[in-house]
Image 1 (cartoon, rainbow, N blue to C red):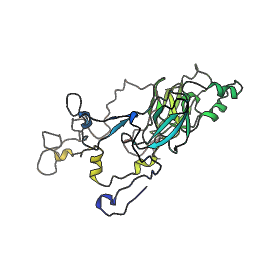
Image 2: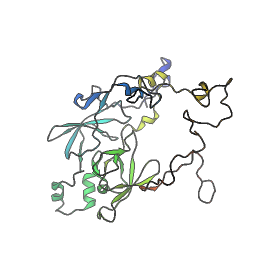
Image 3: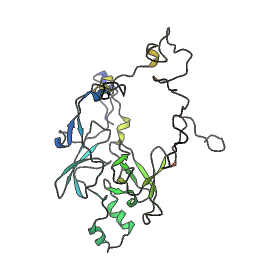
Image 4: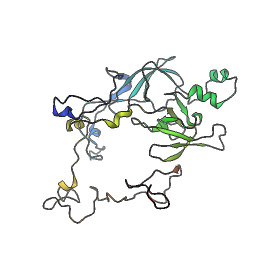
Length: 316
């Protein structure tokens, strides 16, 4: 992390990840469009606030990122860029044959000059010929499961760390796209489609879920893994990011919040609730018991920050 000499109060607590490899210039303009409209402030099409604490911020351009990775062939990484719309970095790719440029979510350790490839359309004929026409999954994994390559889940060896994981066949990545996130392949049958139509993937929350074997994933970990260690240093940086202040309910009027009003710091004899009246503490559950997610094999641990206890009731 990069720290600064406290010449001003705003930089005394400023902490930033060291990313000297990032591109210093402007983005590739054909792959961007301006971010404008009243939706920036958290409003819907009728002008009502749908998301609180949003508004203002620096002018931005939205980067068009390719989460599908359907284009096969070799791609060369031109540069690694900062994207103001996400925590992870993005990589500008150039197709070696068509010279077409695309943005993807960069993996940790990816640098300019790297060559990556997508195998979503299947195993290339040249690769099969080099193996004598025999589908040896170990040899295929050794030649395809490299950092930054996009593969169907059934072609990825068990134990591999992946990011930008898809949930459906033919769609792009939807899971593990933030900085430093990843999932791990924990169960797969590479040979038989009928016996194992799904692949088991463990997410960082501890949840193990089934995902269709033809869904996509990218080898590696999402870039900018030290993003969570950063400190903005001053309130103004939050405003530059388009984040407005959060007011406590206790400081509001009684007409604005259930905790508001009264003389002094008193919320009255009421249980903690949100601004809409939903109970805010004590593990209030909103999911219907009849609506079970059949894709989840092992649910994530939900203990509201308490100590985990084993089945015998003792403390771990």
